[in-house]
Length: 177
Length: 177
DNA sequence: GGCTATCTGCACAGTATGACTACGTTTGAT
DNA sequence: ATCAAACGTAGTCATACTGTGCAGATAGCC
Image (cartoon, rainbow over all chains, first blue to last red; front, side, top):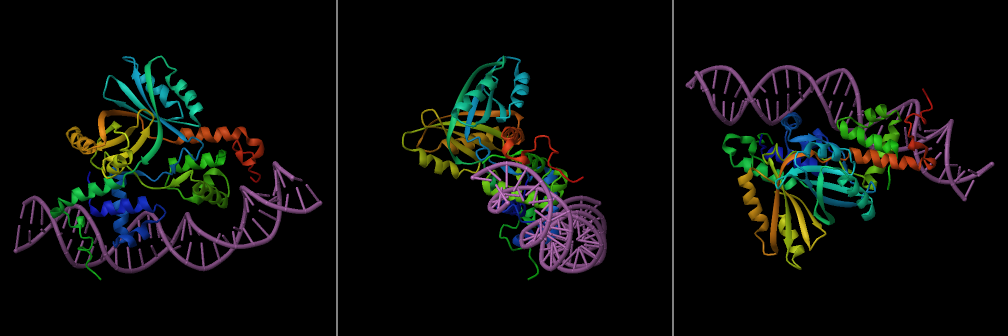
């Protein structure tokens, strides 16, 4: 469930340079290829790495406008609303949150005018009582994971007594020159 | 800037089965390998596909709690606040939104108790006037892009007169058995 | 008609991949 | 102290994919 320093370095390396293969990664990390393969297999079966799908930029697809909508849902209509929102392509994600049965969803649109169409489609459903929309102007921190991975790896390095591969110094377990 | 049907099928295919290579993708799509390579190169230089980095699950890393925080910022402190939030690993993304200089950020934490620590760190900064946090309970629609890609591909199929590769029927341009 | 862009089919050398083995080290239990 | 399990290393093997370049065919455009 938690990752060690080598896992962390591997994930960060793959996040920075996704095109490199297992062999190149093993060279960069200074470990054997089999080790990298085993770590990757484990990370994927753990679910830490869910996959290597393409990161698609909605803006480049022609959807440069992003917005977040907070929805207030009528009691007991939650699952209907979810099913409805799942059918809208412009709904990129949907969360239910604390607060009185509210939901938060991320929307994209082709333009500010098109956003109106999207919102109409989103809220054009009986279960939705009210919607508040915030349009994104800037994105100073795009969705990222590397700092968290680094922190998770450091945290586990604290337990390093039980794990020589934790290897905070980065060299200790390389026995052969 | 916009994608045609083949691009769309390629992206969807890669999103569903990221492990397949260019050759296998060309077989699945029924086109030549060079075509797939050319499309991929174009999609990446267009910025439509930003990369193939690993999709890391924060929950599996030990951060199962997600929250969204709406921040109200003191006039003129925006860039300071951004820099501050960028240093917090648990801040996975940050947007500035419409409303009076507000920001919306996505947080993760190790537990609800830990979330308090994260929020304290986030709002422990002079420029932040007020923060409202919504904890995510469920995630009925995880971050997705496939429906949008499919829609973008269909939209461009409307212009298909100018692009035989638009190929709405999916077979028309396969000349050889 | 002639041009450009695109796709096909094919070839090449270089390289990565998955699977496997044998062996040394570390860890924790008996 | 001793043992077994887990892990990493180094090496091998056959297979498969990659990047690249080429000529030829097709479609749309001026």
